Length: 138
Image (cartoon, rainbow, N blue to C red; front, top):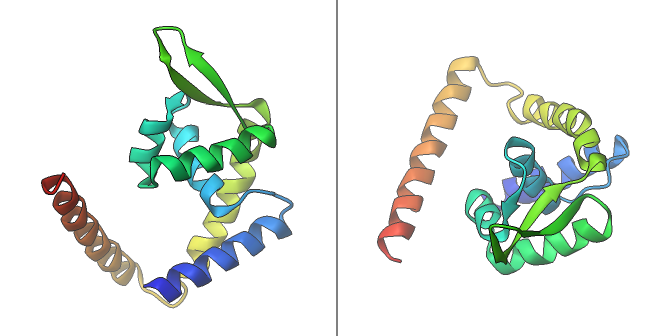
């Protein structure tokens, strides 16, 4: 699984560069979540990406510096910082999703539709098991 993840990350980053999209894998995970639901806290992003809060904070710092996202104080709770997409980030969504689709085609090359569905079903079961285990031990 580790080898597959490492190769997938390298190929995906190469495809992004070929399409002149200068976003790392971690940044892409965060963008994907923010494209679905903009204006989230670091904790919410951490939960939705399964990345540690400190990892999310470091990645967000780089994204702020590149003008991809911005930080704003939550007016309803001044102790919270809200992470929001910039117009630049919003403009990248269509291109990024096209590259993501290219990756999906490559990933499932040679699989029948039934095999793909079975594989994704098995992965979903593993994810549920691990998620339940994590929550039981907290």
